Image 1 (cartoon, rainbow, N blue to C red):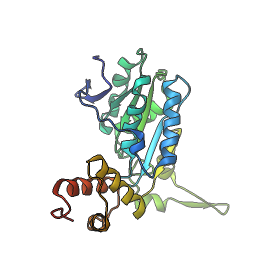
Image 2 (image 1 turned 180 degrees about the vertical axis):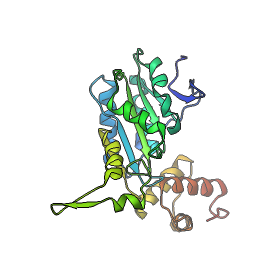
Image 3 (image 1 turned 135 degrees about the horizontal axis):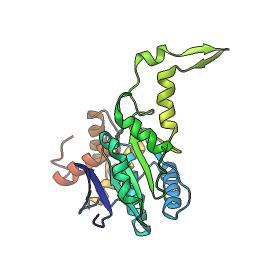
Image 4 (image 1 turned 120 degrees about the vertical axis):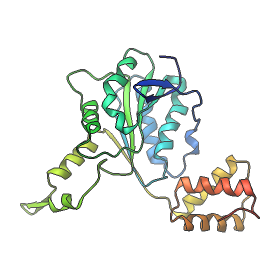
Length: 256
């Protein structure tokens, strides 16, 4: 396997990525607690200490995927490597992990936007990887997964109907228990909340500054807020999109 900072599992093989996104952790705003916890876990991992698989859940555009990428930027010099694995390819986990086992580098399997049906074979593969099967899991591999769903699988109306009372306590049904049990297999669980207005504007200023457009005035702020209102979202993704439009077209011509 050719040496690289990051790989993508595709067509049954690990493909080295030539151009890897560099994202310093200090570019992640309004998620300090989540960042601190994931960095602590990752630092332990690269030092060869016990560390946990991590699940990052919450609103879209709040920095879940960016935070995983930032871990690579922060710890690549200490031997961390990233392997991007599409959710539907989790059935290939034994083949993905096999060539990594004997390397001195530490590998995070990055599963972005994970959500599968209860009958998906990828679900069984993930459970086995998290809990361990007959074969001992490699010590130099962790899974970091992101999902917009708290329990990784779609919630249905039938799940709510399965709740029942036992001695004045409300208990979930079998379907819900299975979904909760899957997410609980991750030792580190980080939740990301939607950004408020001030946090969104901080992100806009950050992205504008990265694009060499440091000027900030009332007109820029109003345009940024209109942009978010039109998209019904104050996510980091929306902030970056506005910044690119504003810096690219100029204050007089930017659309909102």
